[in-house]
Length: 134
Image (tube, rainbow, N blue to C red):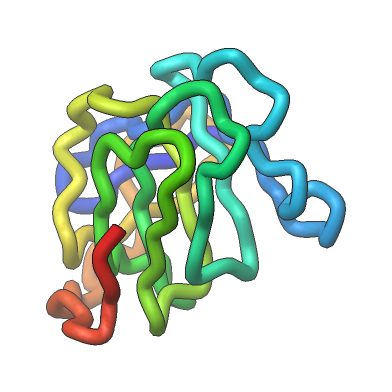
């Protein structure tokens, strides 16, 4: 499964894991020494994360039910927290991978090699001021 940016048509992550059970959400990236720059972990439902016991920094992208990016927290190091009220899912990425994601972008999962979404007419939404700092 791949994660793509609808605005740019670029692949954000070519290897995506989904954490959608209680056990997989609880484990997250714990126990790993690093995260491949081409990989991502999508945690749902989720609006806040912590990096307690992690060994490396990550970039965190908060998205709402329509997969619109609400907040981006970059270089979240070990023993930190980040949240965005209104987010429904979190995408965890290797820190500093420079994927060009912006607040308001639409992202989506794809099982195919397509690079553009059939839902290009979906509107972008503005940043949510309720999102808190890390």
